[in-house]
Image 1 (cartoon, rainbow, N blue to C red):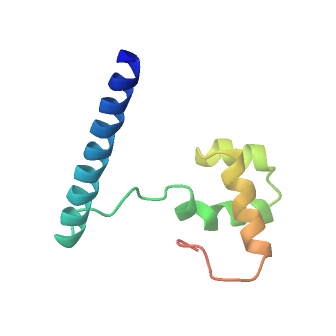
Image 2 (cartoon, one colour):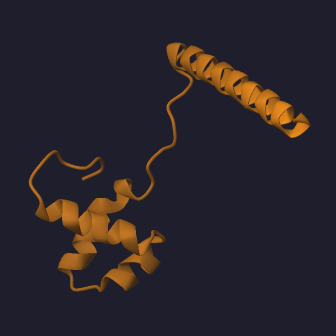
Length: 89
């Protein structure tokens, strides 16, 4: 019984915290101060494609550019599929 009360109070406090966070983020966005995380690997997609065209293996590309292998494969996949260009290309 007491455990259920503690869980309910905790859940209520968590909802309040998330609501305050949403309000704060909305206020920061309105002031132009909140932009979110800068995508790091997507800025290097051009370099990934250049290295790949030069015959460098995906593992070596990832190590050389300090990005993950999955980011390398994502860049190569997006380069093959038509659609909107990725940022930084």
